[in-house]
Image (cartoon, protein in one colour):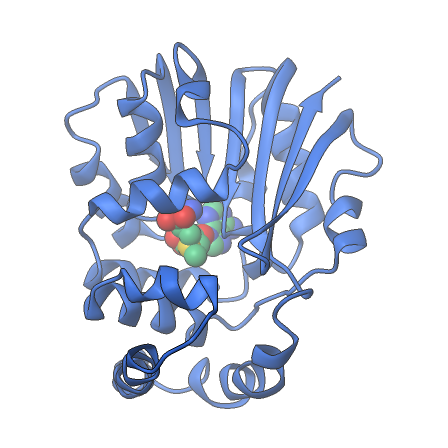
Length: 255
Ligand SMILES: C[S@@+](CC[C@H](N)C(=O)[O-])C[C@H]1O[C@@H](n2cnc3c(N)ncnc32)[C@H](O)[C@@H]1O
């Protein structure tokens, strides 16, 4: 179990269920510096797949087969629909804590999931076991570094209010905050991340804000905490990237 986080996401995914081209750009950013073509001919595991948007780009990049799973049943239903054109990808209702796979996958990715878990280390152990020797683990999670200002005001709001009220109310608040954010984007700024946000539609920005406000658990890890996830496991960290200056992409090879 993961402390109720998955139920909250189920609500979000039932609402924001469509895969859009911008998600491809996002996924490419999250797996940086690997190119999407990295997935060509590989068998992958997508842990905590949400609506299946990341699996979709891996499959379109030529992956041979995949297994995408999520703990939330509604979400799994959406992912099955979004991946219906790719029978080589199985979509399963499963918790990462119950994953039993041994040396089965060339690539294992877990995007935006670990930071919401009560026991991330247990999850990474299962993911590492699922990899073939020489296979690649890709973990993306929020960073503490780069989010200090955000953490001062938004994280208390999430912890004390928005993760506790009904998601419908959180959604209304997300809409109001998104409106403010969009107004801010109209003013001149030299911030590359704001420039990236300005390219998104209102709905997509709202989905992102909602996603931030909803979970009961949201860890923002330091560089050392992120690296510690791979410690004591048969993994060699090959690269840690401070993605967009506010998140971590950890790449590791299975020994
Ligand atoms: C922020 S979403 C990210 C989804 C997807 N990886 C993406 O990038 O679109 C986090 C996902 O983790 C899932 N999740 C939470 N706890 C889980 C668990 N114990 N096992 C598997 N998935 C879980 C949630 O249901 C949710 O879909």
